[in-house]
Length: 171
Image 1 (tube, rainbow, N blue to C red):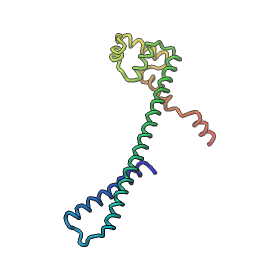
Image 2 (tube, rainbow, N blue to C red):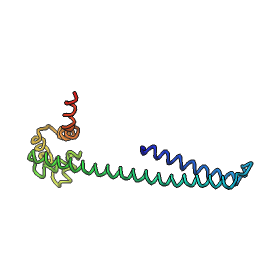
Image 3 (tube, helix red, strand yellow):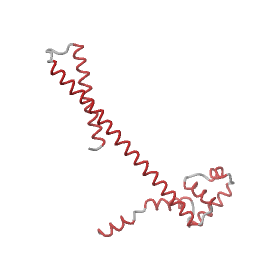
Image 4 (cartoon, helix red, strand yellow):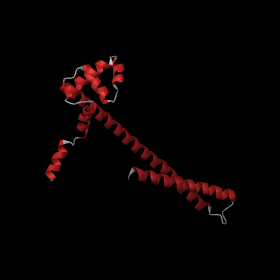
């Protein structure tokens, strides 16, 4: 059962049980019953509503566990993607022959820091950061920050090789 349907069922079940108990109490207080119901019938209705509330708690616990598990898996996946992307960046920087300082500047540049911000973070002058940026662009074969960023975005968006092969084989 889908998570949304489970939660909707949970809310409906608990709502119906709560309405029963509230209506029963109000009917007793306000004397709304014209003819009293037998104590056996009343007990059966209360037991049914109590079972409904207990089932609501159980279904709520199941929904919470599923949601927490899904969240944990998503966080693990995100950590893996970040680690893999960071490794990809480092490999690309090495293949371009960037110095450690240029690697820092390239990473800051990809993160969107301005020249001034990079200079402050690296405790360098803006002129040094500009020179390092130009060296990065030259080594990467791009003309500026936008093209540098697009190289990595293209890598992220490129289809998997096995997906391409499957599509070619199916055509």
